[in-house]
Image (cartoon, rainbow, N blue to C red):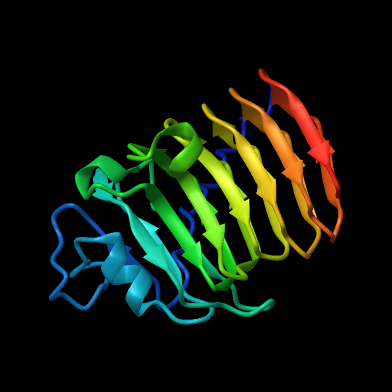
Length: 212
């Protein structure tokens, strides 16, 4: 008689990092940002988070935001979906750039749907980093409208992102990486002094590199 098949061991759901901040469409910015009392806006979370902190975004549609707080190489700030794929929509608050990383370092943005850049493909971005932003990782996001613009900063990695517009690197001083992306427009890299690594991307438009 065959031995009975062993029951599989249940897999525990992933544990949220300690001290995470939560954002929910049912929250309030007067709350503490905890799981049971989440914030309402990503801007409130981005203005509150500290190095090593994680912002967990629950399903729903949220206005765009700017982050100027920084992590560290060992304790980055992470902004990611709590579950599903929440949408960050610049049309809700008229933003030219839906998500902006300004003068901040050690930031990771993961698993978000980003749409509604109000400036159009060439003047507005789904995500824009600027003013010396450094060690920024954009991974596994779906950029529905606008481009990704990495401008006048340092190190950045763009990995496994679907971008309907352009991916644009301009005047950065650190190492830049673009891998495994699906780019509906052009990939452009101009005047970057730290080197640019481009590998395994699908680019519908043109690959344009100059003075790197």
